[in-house]
Image (cartoon, rainbow, N blue to C red):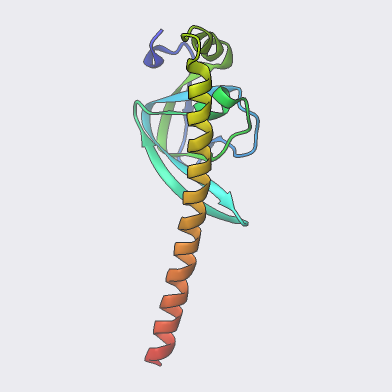
Length: 141
């Protein structure tokens, strides 16, 4: 089965939350139509991580590493996703050659850490910009 041929499709409207950060993973998704926003909560602030579009997959990291969701996914406009069930995903992972699963798990963990660090850097950058803007405005008065 191709990712595009998932038997179950789900539809979401603008602003609908598809995946919630911190919830245990049980499915991955492929975007069949539309686009989604990826955000992370850091220090009580929501930070935009990126946008995914048709053909891209999300939710796979939690399935691979059997951990909670690392980000929130929200529909931008009308979105249709194909659902990739954990059972299908696990079977596909088990079909990999010996030695490949630890490599994939390591890559997922590195990606998770990198995403976390980049999100923190983005938050610090936003804070620094606000301080500079505040300082600039005060100097003009």
